[in-house]
Amino acid sequence: MAFGAILDHFERISVPPRSTSDADQKEQKDAQKSKESEEEEENGSNKFEWPEVKAAPGEHALQFSYSLWFSRRSPGNKTSSANYEQNIKIVGSFASVEQFWMLYSHLARPCDLTSSSDYHLFKLGIKPMWEDSANKKGGKWIVRLRKGLASRLWENLILAMLGEQFMVGDEICGAVVSIRFAEDIISIWNRTSSEHFITNKIRDTLKRVLNLPPNTILEYKTHTDSIKDNSSFRNTDVFMR
Amino acid sequence: MSVNATDVKASGSREIPSRRVLLKDASQLPSEYSTTPGGTMFSTTPGGTRIIYDRDFLLQVRESPLARTPPKNLPKIEGVTDVADSTTNGSIEQPKQNNNGKEGAIIEAEEPQFEMDI
View 1: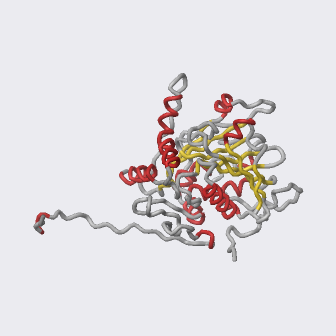
View 2: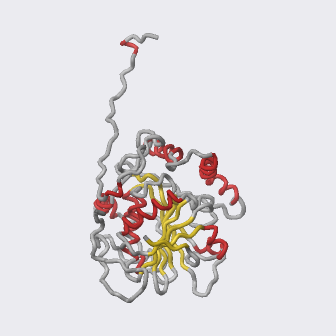
View 3: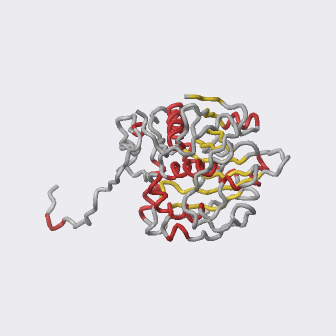
């Protein structure tokens, strides 16, 4: 569909608001290259192939296509980057609002998942891994939830992401809901952890779409730090409004 | 260069693309002059093409017959894709309030989705 091709083009040339410095321009170039270079890196034994999706005529196309991933950690199994990648599987991919609901409505809700399970909803072309070229300079906002709230807040978060409510160019990479023993955690990942204008805007949108009370604690963690301590949710930077 | 009227090829007319943006909160107003409500940046996005959907619209699409069709090629994952067909359950039911005292997770389940910040 011609319309799809045009959107694809816009996606590549649309840029975050303040992108005039040389450093920013370099980063954008890197981001554009990310897909290719990643494929080169993986040209070895198991080349990863992204599924092809497009909005059918009559469907409501999304600004970006997405893949939904699922992972479940077996208890006591310390995660290394390699076995994390083996553990994580694409459940489905979509390019339109209709295709999203088809998939979403036929999956267990986060609250019904067993402990140590995660859903990761990421833009097509970005793996839900710290090391992915789209993520490596980025970070994530984390909201810890008491048990019982994850399904509803996850739905609100991903609807806001799919509907482009964050308004930060193509900074958003994806969102994760993590079901754990004593708490559930939702997070949203962005490309550039050093751009505080962008991370603040994401935080404010997050508070609005999740309808978080003013005293809610939000935490930010860069993926570089996550790689250093091999942990998603420890040693975060804590923010309170 | 002058153009003879008969040389000009008729081009199909098209509507100027536009869409309705419903603001629900003052914080949705843009902070930069180059941005319109809804977040389209005219300086960088030709024609203002970002596709924005609000939550109500997305939930409305959920009720369409197409959106209720089971997806093809769904992998079998125990406890994830083998659940009973949930398409008949509309939206997520509101969870019950139970204060089991977890800090940092005090979210009122009964609050409306959006509130005005006045």
